[in-house]
Image (cartoon, rainbow, N blue to C red; front, side):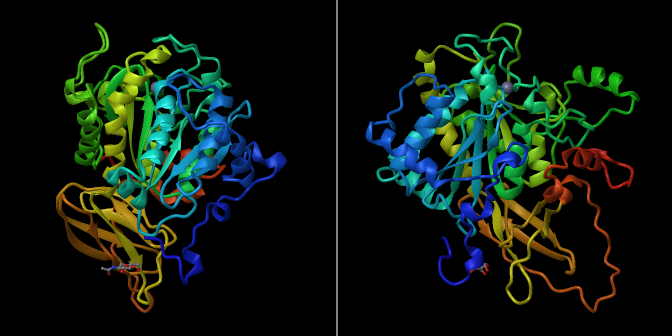
Length: 486
Ligand SMILES: *[C@@H]1O[C@H](CO)[C@@H](O)[C@H](O)[C@H]1NC(C)=O
Ligand SMILES: [Zn+2]
């Protein structure tokens, strides 16, 4: 429910949050602008039936036209914004689908899908267009979709790598042509990494995504890929093994390791992956794509157990922002012929919807001070899973958890830490409000709690200083860094 009356601070209009940057700056410093211009330009297409969506591939212009047409035709359910531009100047479009597209709904989660981070993996790009179509046209007739959109803001980015897509070729199943961005960087190796320093130069597409997810607290996310059929979950990377000392040796060693890198929320990630694979027409059968490629039991895998990688997006989402992201490999062929698209849509439709609804599992609530004011950036840590999730400016947090009894520690600067025990059940989320008491007047002899995963603590400073951030995040010289398996 959105609190519309009274507290103007609670109104989170996209136009306010996303500072529109101007001309010269906007190339490196993306702003988000669900502009009126976009809507107006879409009107003509809406009248011309531009919201009809065929099963074929849409180039950047066609995709843009479609998104504009939908946003013009469904203004109450959609908002279109761009988080920045690719190297070659193409907009990185995001469509929000929600009963409250322009305004965050207090206490309700924001979720996302990002497709086409690898430009030649094209199926997810088209499926997100069909998901948009399906959601906006089902709202009035399908009570489940109505519930979902009334309680969730769904942000869909059909292409994170429009430049790579522009040079990719339909029918190419196995090549890497078009995978990288226009400067030949693999964007799914371009994020700050928790386990190893990532020295790759940050790319505009990656910077835009980092900025985006630092501004919106996403609870759940899926990254759509092609080339396999599996749901792959964190961690993608592994800590350096003790036996390798040089980074070159390490990377050689790691690439043959194939051992799982277990996240503290392994149970949750497995569950989320199973929700996708079990709702998919065939993913859970775990059939290998072709002879010689792996079979995945139940259609899921730990990322590092498949193959470790540095600089991936999913580990970053989780460790820096408390957003649970998994990687969805949805087609054996990276860029299959267009006539196969209806089949892909049918295979994935149920999975895509049911997966997003998982944002409503677990515990969520508000952290407030003694006067009932929200405490922003309080760290919410569930005991035994030491990844800090931080509260929003409204004091909100979300923590996806399976049924069970948990203990949470909430800490914030200037307040006494607070421990709360709570239970999670299967049928609906647990509401958990936590009141923090000011530390003023107390002798500051608080036990410094062991903070295993530090990256989260510096998330808001990551903007445009990503190189520094990377270094800081992967520095382990303060003794605070420790892998949970140790
Ligand atoms: C929890 O806090 C929110 C925000 O202050 C409030 O709207 C809600 O009524 C509270 N719920 C409970 C059960 O205390
Ligand atoms: Zn990929």
